Each structure stands twice: as C-alpha cells, then as structure tokens.
Image (cartoon, rainbow, N blue to C red; front, side):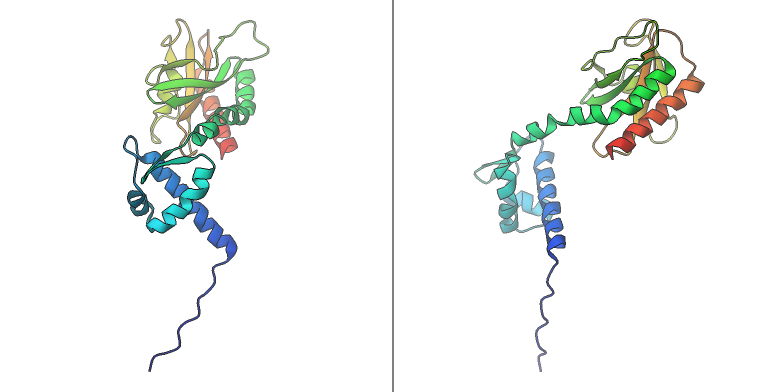
Length: 221
C-alpha cells in the first residue's frame, strides 16, 4: 500500500530570496569569466547548475539593469557593469584615507594605495605628510610595471615569507619606497606603501606599512 504523499515544506521567503541572489551573482560571474566567446544559455545553465528556464528568469533583472545583454542565445556583460566599476575607485580612496593619513604623518613620507591593473600598477590614493619641509609628489593615476618598485612588488608577495618589500630608485632616481600587500579582500590585488627622498629605516617603516595595509583591508571588508 502506497503511503500518503509528503507535504511540500515551504521555503522561507528570506532564504528563497538569498538563493535567488546567489544564483544571479553566480550567473553574472559565469558571464564575466568568459573572456572572449560569449557563453550560451545552455553553457550558463551548466556552469551554475540550473535549468535553462531558471537561467532565463535570472537574466531578466540583470538585463533590465544593464548588467548583461542578450545576443540571441548568447550572453555578454552590459555597460551597467562599467557604471558600477566607475564607483569602485572613489570607494577605495575613501576607505584607505584614514590609514594612509596616519602612515604619512607617522613616517613623514608620501603614502599611497596602489592597485594592480593587468601588468601595470596604478596609484589610486595618495596622502602627503603635512609637517615635512619637502616630500615626494606622487600623482593619483600614476602607472608603472607591476614588477617594478616597492608598490608593484608588494602586490606579488606570497602569503608566506616577507611581509613587506623596499626599493631604491626604481621608479624615480633617489627615491626610497616601502610597501606591503593588502590581503584578505576578494578580487583586490593592491599594496600600501610610502615613498621618500631620504633613506628610511626598514626595521621601523616596514612594520608600519604592514599595519597600514591591514587597516585598509579591514576598512574594505
């Protein structure tokens, strides 16, 4: 004798919304991860472990906000992603300002937050000390190869071994740089450092840039 069918246990609305959001974000990530060839609906369904019908439903709000665009059965990122990205740097600057200000005033050198952009490193936030007679003028937006200078080299440091690096005259003759990586922020490859026109004591400044990098990471979490 067959038993009575089990009643369907309702999913709380909050949990269902959370699952929908998680799938929507996974879908957006899957589209972003396709470097050249736009993925199809079927490929996206396989990538996030959902049915084609579910993918179609998830695409509707993303398309409405311009985050993705449809080309028949193919899906690409939309211009709405660029609008979101344009707000990232101001947010980074705002979060990093307190730690950079403390670092600049304590060391008496120009402090900066540098972010990796492909094979280049870009200064996205700069704070100059207020009390020194002279200091390095470092422009926001300045770029250099990511493998040169303390700021770039710090970005590539492994989680084991050295916590900070220094350089001398690699980007500017006579300039001394110290930097430490910003760790623990998903998707961000960055460093915090200082640059000065006179030699700095690494045993003192090294731990200071490490601490500042940790403070920036905490502000961004």
